[in-house]
Image (tube, rainbow, N blue to C red):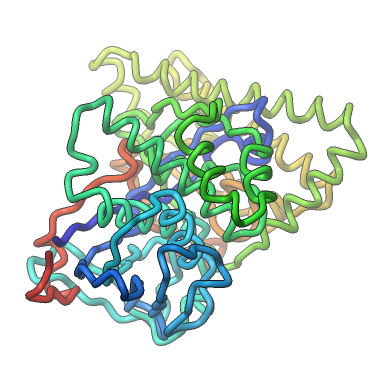
Length: 463
């Protein structure tokens, strides 16, 4: 059996920090930068042998992790790391999936991970292309921990794609090719398992929007209550497997993952600024400010939430425009910048979106100042202000938790090449590397095997 699954990256366009609270919703855009997991070996072993699982990431130096497991003793202390540095995301995903499945047969499994170029800064890398030219991946001379990330959710993509590959190994090659209802149930199972594995690997319960986007695609998302996974993590190891099964299959997670995508002709344009931010520190400062200033924080979060939801509504209203009106609107956007669009009669729907983005930035900047967290640092403020003057741009934000990872613009699709050209020699944009990404309606998908020939070794003894 040879199968390849992939999950999209993400940009939290609206809902930074509010996504931490189950009382608020966020708009998560799935991106065309994908994390791929290819099952390259699945071989049965004898009952007396240990299960052997190897995960490769050939794009990075030392990207190989191999484990030997007794399927009757699935705890962290019992798993043997046969090769490779510690990788908590790989190790925890393997233990979580096998603890859920409780397999009775031993296998030798090999899974190869590929990440699209949008996830990491590509300085000093070398491209390798598949035989049919459809896939291009960049290889680095450094370990994965030493290559700067762009903040698209690489760990969530890794965990979710690896979970799908492992489920395929044990549940069969057609585990996602069933009825719509059965596929929905399988996706929910995969999502829940991935959320658990990701939280355990991180050592904390995150909001989960990155895993949700990796599984379901572009969505309006409301998180699960953290105590669902906290209680599981606090269980005695002897009770973990049964607790996990109950949580994944029967618990009411009460999450929202309502499909919602950008409108045709308008795209996200991500700009990697190669700065890097420590998200946990930013979050810690914001939560401390919220705890110490509950009334003020509620006021700010309420206003920010209203702006977020109005952005989603404005995009939906634009989608409902007639074809002729919408075509004229896009033409107008291509020849005007956000700072020039001041009359909604000339560009129906655009001014609402522009104002929503401005309001979102206002409240995030205010939260930056009052909490001390660099959500929209001054350098990013200057950059985003300049972006409002680019023709074809509706403006942008520092996505997610903010900081120095990237900027995220909403732009007319036909203006992207011009924006990249016009900013190439601009001193303000010298540190920006524009990432050519599209929003993705779908989350987890199965890829074509032939698109990876020449990049992966295909043994002759595949099952």
